[in-house]
Length: 131
Image (cartoon, rainbow, N blue to C red):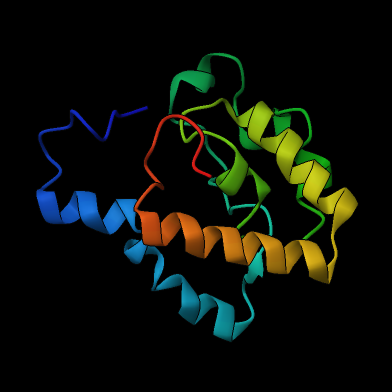
């Protein structure tokens, strides 16, 4: 995974866009079209092209994929809010599956609120906890 803080290809403006998640605004179009929801597991590519490609050929092989794929992907979710950006996918899937198990309007509202809180503080790219 590329370290955003030391990547020389990322401009200052790009760092601000990522830290505040403004680069996710085009996803609102997908929400309006009904392709994704506000809250749910983050949409993932089918092919794994990072350090986890050594362990898995494709995303369906990661434990927990089946459960998390039963719900519509979302703009934000438990894994995005509660985990550092650089943890492995199987750990993120555990949070996604917990979301599927506990889905409710209250949980969605809480995750949306926390996502706005992280955005206003510019902490999306933080390696540690965000909230």
